[in-house]
Image (cartoon, rainbow, N blue to C red; front, side, top):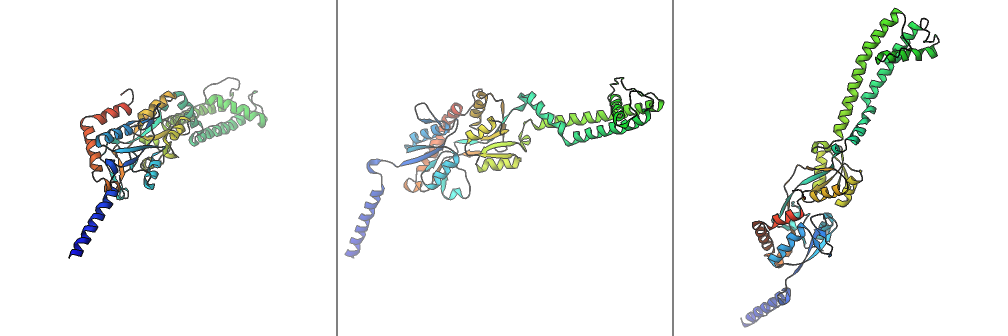
Length: 372
């Protein structure tokens, strides 16, 4: 019995010793590696070398209120943050991690500190009316217009042959030889048909004059039909080049980063997606007229709209279908083993920041456009 008691005491002392080794020394808490993607209004490098922005300032306030020590690391993209998180070099990611069945196995998420949604920043072609008119002129080469032009020329050729046959001996201005005379007759048909009537070639005999009336009536009808087709195609092309809502983005080139939520939304729209590694590169595609629009999220849309204005572009922001993308702080579940209260501390800090409107203040400071 004494031996059993001694063994229990020994193991209790050893367990306490090991537990002490695992505890921070001198009351020092663990330092967490925190990642945030760089983006206008979200995480920007300041002249003093410090990173500031909405997500950064939210986290700094959380860390102060929760007494959390951390080391901030700015990532070039959201996918870079995710890669570093899953590799273990980041403990916490402030933006870009989304809830899913698979992610919930390894990640715990805080309460949302921001609600975002997909936005499309598109060039406002209505501002460039001359360019849209020129682009719409491609209607002249549409199949229906080309077919109408072919019918028009066929009409001139057929009636030109008939008129030449009737007038080749009575009208001096129409040669009796077919090679030269057919062009004279076709010129006469064209003059009658377009109601111009230059008077240089005029039908003389009664049969040709009756034919001229028929040419004029049919030509008038045919010209009106062709004009209607050209105007219709012109208007359709002009409408196609104008982006007003999501339905106008079908078939348009939209630059976007490699983000599953964004790409899935654009595929539903039926857009032609130009994938770029970073949002600034995606914006450059639109700026250089290699894309009609760029896909981004609410929060950075105002910053990019201002950037476009500075670059001399007239743009419009088109809302996506989903405005319920909850932005949360993601952390590795293993962190809760060392600090079970970590998630509660972060959530309480977020609740307090909502209650005293500090998050609203940061939104207006970093994310709202100057005109709002």
